[in-house]
Image (cartoon, rainbow, N blue to C red):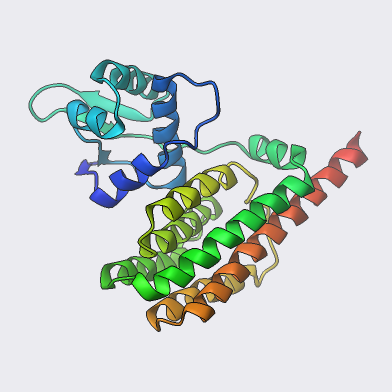
Length: 258
C-alpha cells in the first residue's frame, strides 16, 4: 500500500490525545500510547505517513531521542515501518484489534456506577459539542460529518463501525470549534474503545444509530442548537445503556459459570 502524508486534521487530533495515557508512564511510553490510541480509534490508518522525526518531535514537545524511543517500540509491535533516506519516514502498517476476551474482561470488571459516570460525561460533552456546532460549524465540518454518517451506514464490520462512530463523536466536537471539548471527547472515546462493543445487538439497533447520526447532522446543518443538543445527548445515552446491558449480561454469565 502506498503511503500518504498525514492530514492536518489527523495530526491535530493526535496532539489532542495527550493526557489520555495512564498515569506513571515515561514520556516515550506516553507518546507511544498516544499513537497507539490514534490507531485504535482510526485517526491513524494503514498507509498514513507520520511527519519527519524533527517535525513530529517539535509538535509533541519532546526531544528527537525520546521520539525515536517511541517509534522503536511501535516498530517492535508491528504498528509502523520506518525507512531511511531522503524519502524515508515512518508509515502506519498495522491496526490494533483488542481481543474479545480483553474487551469483555474490562467491561465485566467495570462497575455499573463507573459506566454511568462515563455515560453522563459523554452525554454532557456530546450535548454541548452539538449545541455549539450548530452555531459554529463550517461547510467543511458539515461535509466531514456527512462522510462519517455515510461510512457508518456502509460499514459492515462491527469493529470498524465502532471506530467510525467514535470518529463521529469527535468530529462533532471539532465542528464546535473548541479544542478543550475536542480533547475531552477524544479522551473519553479512547476509554470507550477499550470496552466491549461487538456483541450482536437487536436487528434494528443499526437503524436506530443511523437515525440518531442523521438527526444530529441535520440539526447542525439547520443551525438548530436545541435539536442538535437533544439528538446528541440521546445518541450518547443510547450507547451507554447498551454498554451497561452488556456489562450486566457478562456479569451474570460469569456468576453462572463460577
